[in-house]
Length: 216
Image 1 (tube, one colour):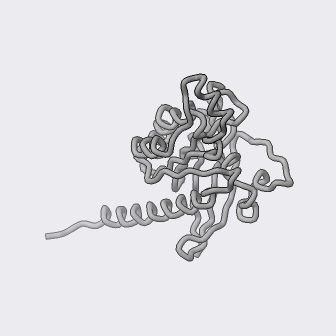
Image 2 (cartoon, one colour; image 1 turned 60 degrees about the vertical axis):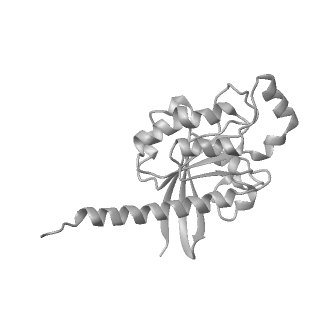
């Protein structure tokens, strides 16, 4: 039996061409999923021979196996602009797991995890497990980018700081990836599927327990 899981990409990472204060524009999936996943991810921008124009909201699909069981992921690519603040909550119901992502070279997007995204998802999806994801790790050692950050007395977000953020927002895990180097991308979705399935089982048994009563 195939499991169906709803994944929400609620936090977005900055486009590389944007300045540190220009805000967030493109979705995390755009920068996270490498062309190597094109056979398993039904999205045009995962295929190097096709162009992709990011949209406000888009549903993506991915098939994988978790502990030998087939899993079908529905990944919702949600817009992060303030203009969509009223529409975005419409996509949160039925979410099985939330991925709060940030650009490790953008302290602005990192701070938004706790300042903006966590308060929003905690309000609309209080019981849904969270995974915090640091994106674009290949740029941590980009000398030109690091130099620009230092001019503003800033630096790339370290793995340790990412872990601290994950703990601060009650996330079940902190993961990092690089689309350019094709590192850990598939691992992130494998972990998301495992977390979602585990959460489903806990919720099922919680409902069973709550529905039972003891007569003495």
